[in-house]
Image 1: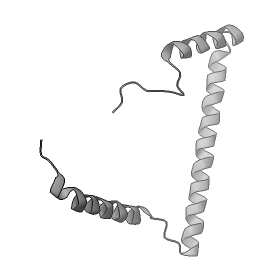
Image 2: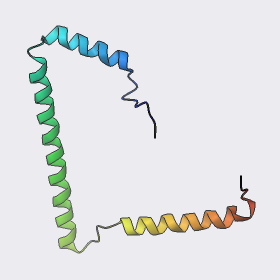
Image 3: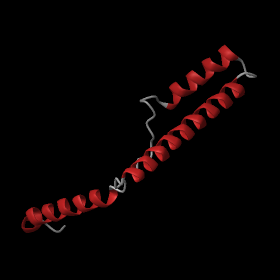
Amino acid sequence: MISNAIFLFISGAEIGFILFIVLLVFGADKVPEIARGLGKAMRQIKDATNDIKSEITKGAEKQGIDIDITKDVQKQIDQVKEDVDEVTGPIKRKF
């Protein structure tokens, strides 16, 4: 796992500078309100996304469409692994 997270190609110093500018522009008393508003907005977007997913799932089930594609995908992944093993089997080296 990558230990250093890259967030929009912005380093920690740049994020700190942006937070400093936000603090200067809006003031210390407004920053918590802004953060709270952003948190609520993100929560509403997440809830709306989950609602849309559930509606799509319900509609697909009513139409008799198989929504569990993970089985098919897993079968294809297993098939590709077997094909790769067949091709690379004789040339694999054990280190």
